Picture 1: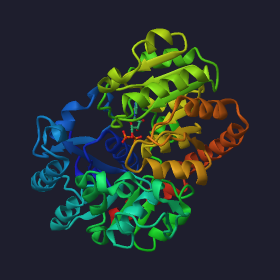
Picture 2: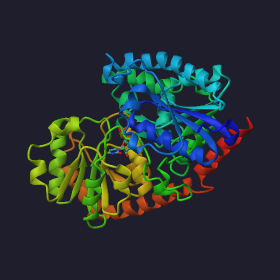
Picture 3: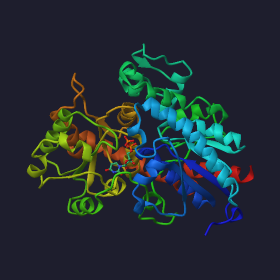
Picture 4: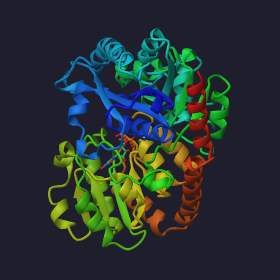
Length: 459
Ligand code: UDP
């Protein structure tokens, strides 16, 4: 039964960017809003809504869709990313307008649009309806700060400097920059425009919400909060893992890929504490076969048990007999319930591409990382993991950009049994505690969400 407006304190429409790493953070934020008495309608594209594993979708959050102009195949159907992004803007604005019109006569009209910062046009639509507009950033503030300085023209691309000094950040080497900046010449211009375009109308946003927590990125948050009404609201890890105030919810998120939950958890249950190397490169990274082979050898040489997520499309890149030859030591799956895996006490090390969600998840569960970045903001995240949060190691690459087996093996051994590993584990423990405190009652992120809701209710 549709609840009337007066049963809720306010109604937020939460518009996601159509990607695995974008939907769950906004869904989890939506649940936190709902827990504070706000009705939330989560909006994805028609195509993505069809691919989501619905059995994972619970809670009272309503679901609606807009169109990106490619309802049958999403971005894969478009001739280029630029063409896709342009269609998403044009058709998305139009269908979002239609959705807001429909909801305006529903008995529970929308008060606020929380939109993924990759979709700044949603703010223009929200403002036409006189609604509150809140940008939602699913990357770190450190990375947002870099794109902002490119947008402002302070940081010029192609990069001329070898060392980049920005307010609120430690000095960064050029290779620590996001790939769309460091390798600007060879990167896809569509992505560059999207990332820098996040700031095109941000001065009109009523709120800038970031999936990070204050204690993790204090300096850069303080700096950015001088320019915008910026609030940290993360980490958006589901309540069942971090925050027992909220109702435990086994089905905590949306998966675009189907996780092999039973096999993973059964296998992990049989492994000793802190012994397993978990390997995953997220939903998009597509390393060369040579790199996959080196990782496979590194795992074997480390002599550790491993759980490796290799997406179906990547499977052909694995060494032919890896699965048979390592069946006693390793389990290779197409997708796993990563949060449950990272929360499992058997996992002692995470070999990761350093996507922002994976990074935040590892921080929240206190799992030390070995970073093998692929592209985008991953090198920047890795720089912070190693030098600022001191929670992991960078697996050094050779002149071809490949992390060789010896380097992978060395980093894994160092984390699990080495001296540096001890210090890293101590830091990991510290960050886990701080992440949990941030979302607990009266923690920094919880207070920010409270403030957001309170002002929404009174506006
Ligand atoms: N993930 C998962 N199962 C897997 C691998 C990844 O559930 O087997 C989730 C992971 O928990 C994270 C997201 O997929 O929330 C990946 O996001 P991230 O930002 O780390 O990387 P991206 O996929 O955007 O490159």
